[in-house]
Amino acid sequence: MIGTLIIIIVAVAVLALALGGIALSRSHRRSGGTTTAPPTAPPKPPPQGPPPTRAEPAAAPVAAPPVAPEAEPEPLGAPPSYRSRLGGVRGLFSGAVAALRAGRIDEATWESLEEALIRADVGVSTTAALLDELRAKVLTREISGGDDLLGALGTSIRQLLDSVGSRALRFDGRADHPDVWLFVGVNGVGKTTTIGKLARRQSAAGHSVLLAAGDTFRAAAVEQLAMWAERTGTEIVRGAEGADPSAIVFDAVQRAAARKNDLVLADTAGRLHTKVNLVEELKKIRRIADRDPGNVTEVLLVLDATTGQNGLTQARQFADAVDVTGVVLTKLDGTAKGGIVIAVERELFVPVKLVGLGEGPDDLVDFDSEAFVDALLAAD
Ligand code: GDP
Image (spheres, helix red, strand yellow):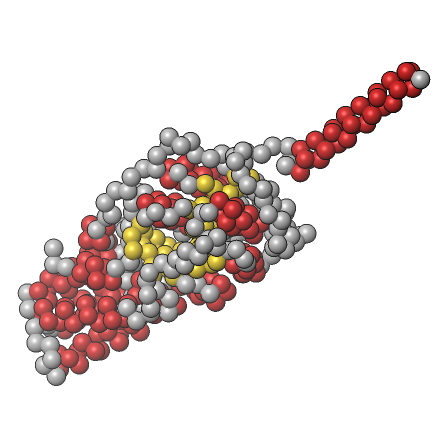
């Protein structure tokens, strides 16, 4: 009798141990064997988005370790001035500007002005339209001196620039519905750097930012963004090289909603691992980012100003595909092709919202048409 009882107790104990072991091994397998998610992380809600397609590599997003509380984000520095950074394009206009300030309006002045506008990549038809308008005003004596002509040119350029809508970055800030800003554009234009710089600015402005390392084509891009996350004290959702970017963005939005982050800045690749069309991939990322609780409020096309007019064809393809809401024009420093700001807005009819004026962390500024034109046509 006692023997039977002991056998039953031992059998129950063995069964309990076996069940516990199975449960443990299952939960370990589910977490991929490792997790760097902080222990306070709330349970992840069940995914509502479509699983990654079979043709694409499965995503394995893993949150980076949280930044240590003592790691204070670096304080913002003073933004650079347009005048100090637009040396390249200002050099093109200096001859014409000097002649006009000296009061000369002759054929040589018109030619110098035309050459400057064309070489600055404003575009042939826009240059012709601008100069025709000015010549007509000189003929009717509406403009009588060089200073007046410079003033009128500045006004016309500003009118061209300011006819495409608000440059403010849209932020809805709905409770539990993080705003998502997607960054698209080809490789090397400065997407990752722009996101890092913007994370600084937005954090300093009081937003709780989360970064989504969706450029899984380049391992370096993920590392680069992780460095920015550390510098800015923001969290990052990242995956292995080759992970599905849509799944990274999906995970980032879920995490942001759970953690009350109000802004997700999502990087994307300018190239693909698979043969899936880049446009289709971007559309999918946008769809998934916008699915409740996500709220896509900006799709920012990042363009490299140094590519000038050559970058415009590409820009049009992106704009057609993903409903671009604004342009970030990087590398405006050190290029003479600054007139591309005008061409981009004329071609895409999308406002340039931000410009990159250098590689430093504070070298991303709101685009200000007045400061831009002042710098372009300043005498000093
Ligand atoms: P991505 O491939 O689009 O993510 O491009 P990255 O962010 O890696 O940037 C490519 C290079 O451009 C890096 O060396 C950046 O430092 C540089 N870059 C980005 N923005 C600017 C800018 O506004 N001015 C200058 N001079 N360089 C920039």
